[in-house]
Structures are given as C-alpha cells and as structure tokens.
Length: 323
Image (cartoon, rainbow, N blue to C red; front, side, top):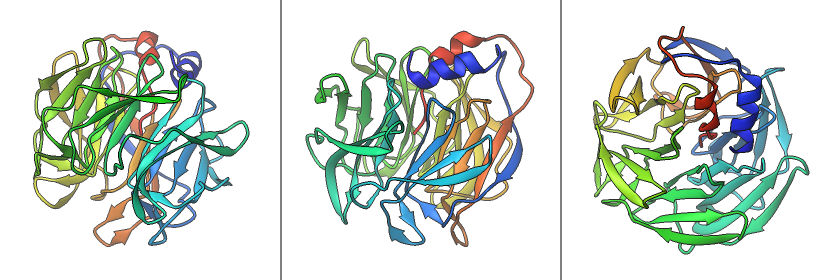
C-alpha cells in the first residue's frame, strides 16, 4: 500500500457503493491562471500542483493546496519551467515529475520533490524525450509511464534503484490520454490520440503479466481530460475535448467490475488541459485548465453522491493519487 492509499484508508470511514458526481463547489482559486500542469494528492492530504503554463507562460511555479484551510501556499519552484509532463505521488510520499517541455524543449528530465524538505532532486532521465504522456504509481511502488507524442512506448521507473525498464508497448501510439491505477493493481488508459486520430479506445495494463487488454470504449472520443480512480474503485473521467474539438463539461464513470461506462452529472462549464486528484474525504479536486473564454485559475471540488451497493476500506488500499 502506498503512502496516499494508507493515509486515506486510515482517515476515511468504510465506504460503500458506486458514487455519483453530484455537487460542484468553488474553492479558492489558484494564484494565477494555469493549464497543462501536473497535480497529485500527498499523504498529508494536501495537493501539489506543478508547472504548466501560468498566466500564459511556461512556468516552474509550484503551489500547495490545503483542503482544511482552502488556501494555497507557494513551494520551492522546479529547477526549470515545465509543462505537458507527467506527475505521480510515490509510496514514500515524494512526488515524481517526468519529461514534458522543460526550459522550452522536449525533455527526458526527471525530478523528485520531497514535501518534508520542500526540495527538488534530479533523478535518472527517461530513455528518450517525452511529452503529452501519462503516468501512475503501481501497487509495488514503481511508476508506469505510457505513450506520449508520438509513441506507443511504455516505461517503468523503480524509485528503489532509480532506473527505467521497458515494458510491453501499447497496441498503438497514444498521446494526450489519461491514466490511473485501479484497486486490483491494473492500469486503465483512456482516450487521447490513438494511431494519430482522436479516440474513445480504452486499454488495461496488467503489471503481473506485462500485457494489454482492450476494454469497453468510452461513449465518445475524448482527450486532454482529467482522470482519477475513486475510493470505491470506479474511475471518473472529466471534461476535455469530446467528440472532435468540442470543449466538453461531460463526466463519465467506468466500473471495472462490469466493464461499463455511466454518464454522470456534468461540470458547470466545458474545460480541458486541467488536472485533478482525489482528496482524503473522497471528493475530486479539479484545478485550472482552459475554458472556451481562455485559461482559468478556477478550483472546484466535486462531491460524490450517496453510495449504493457494497465495497469498503479494501478499495482504498488500491487507490493511488492521480496525476
């Protein structure tokens, strides 16, 4: 169990059922508009937001959000500006930020942030430059990085050895997609540009077999959206560009138990290039992004409706902060 999952399991009462997105609540906005950034929930319940385009420019800025005070705090900036990168919270509570556009160029650079020291450390670079990729932390503590523009390549990072290992590639090139680790340890990858075209395709990766399996496609093509694994084991996919280039407010939920998608209550406005993560109370925090009118500093939580059915604390053990 990683640090985030453990903290949630200890902090959150036993939960039951499949949640419905129901209540949208505005929170304190980011200090400036931000899009194309990274985000993850830390073991202390705060949320770390890194880089992106801040007030319209590539940025190294790092901010921390505390749900208990609804306030933002500046943290030590990254060593260089970075956007279109990946981000994951590791089992030791540190944060791994990978590749993207760094100091204006596509990069393989990898950095680690330690919340206890508020400091950044350089790690072993990826085997090749990568951007518009996705990543999540696996149950064994390694990080799985998938795709990027334009590759089907899959790499695994082991924090204990600070080394990268190639894994079975995806069935086709994929970028601008989303990814999260499920409670059974598999990884769900959704949408993006697949083989060069906008796609609704969904794939599952099993680390135990190093193999990919096709799952039920989303109801429509979707990319540049947000994705999180919820405490009940379902996956919430939010907004993005849907059905072509339509800026969408729609939300869809995927249930791994039934391999089925369900439409949920929509956001109040269409959004893309945002990021999201699950808080310790089970709500989903969505930050920044691009509205039809331009980039935004908006921050909102989505409270999930009354549960139905039966799951429990065990589902929390598999939850890994989305990024």
